[in-house]
Length: 75
Image (tube, rainbow, N blue to C red; front, side):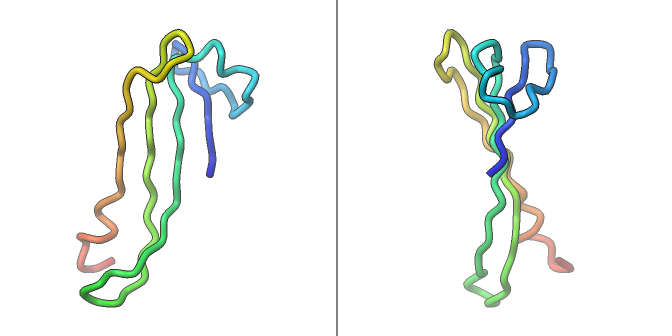
């Protein structure tokens, strides 16, 4: 799992935990594996969680999922 801190102006915090107290965003990228029930095909896909923060608390969470990997018949 890769975690990056994002600053208030979109500057990448470089993943350093020490920078997170000044950030208003946190991103978490996950790589997932699974097997499709219908076909038995193994798939690998990525998700990105974007968290907005204020005063050290999470105020919003948004999931960006790579759905094309399981809906693309050519994949």
